[in-house]
Image (cartoon, rainbow, N blue to C red; front, side, top):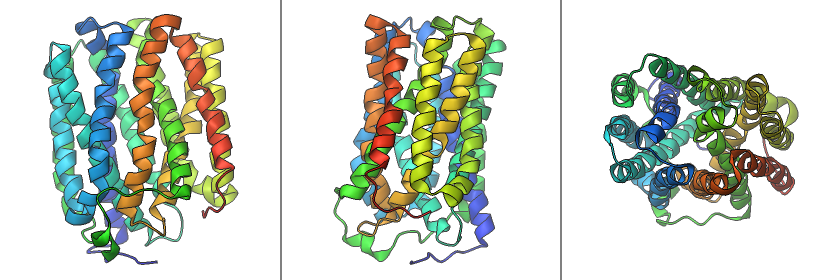
Length: 386
């Protein structure tokens, strides 16, 4: 295994990469926590909101073919710093618009920057992981989820304090910018093997990577159902008071954060396949409970289960993809993410369109089937390493 040279102690690099994951998650959750407010401000229906949300994965999809290639040329360190700063600035832009067209354009750029940040920071994590004997990817994604939980909690406080989204986003953006420039020195510089220079612009995944991508696809549809529609579900289906709307997303993100910190141990103890199968089952059970019993207490429990079930899937898939023998880590992650993020491309607008005609409960019931597909796809994985 080729290990990149480190300029500092592995623990310092681990803190820096964890902080980058935290910054990313904080910005994303801040946006997600204010979706109901933005929907109401722009007076959007469920179908119209679905089309607006379609813009973010469109930006992701546009940037995906370039991600592995540009990371290989420039290095993931520079891409992390540039895109983390851009992501924070674009968050402020989301709160500025008072019409859907400007918001859509902003979200396209937000999605593109977020995707490049996602792949580059995961490339950093894969590179550092080669200096550790035990899995560490779950802990990094746990930092993202903790940031998401913190961001959702701050969002709930901002809503209760009647602070408008743009002022909320300006505070978060400032904190994110200070953080990312503070840790830039401790990101890994030489993270890519030399073979990356010979890779083409568009990396085509082989069968093992395609299966991992399909698992990510199903997982991201389920996560999208919670990130983008959780607040609306709490407001319109569960019909909670306004100050309780944010608690559904907070429950999901809290349990996901806890589950991700435990996932490295779970993989070591039970293996990758067993962990993925258990995750798929638990995700489906949680979503079905939220549909069958749409009451505040039960829905909170249901979203806790979905968070635990979802927690290990993406970090485990990324970790397995990053050890691809055919492609470099950046290219392999980009290939798997290309497939997986199609779930974000399809999921949010599909939920909106289904909800437009049948209601959000039916949409959530259909999304619950994604956990079953994850179980089926996991059985097709021939070899995994913990």
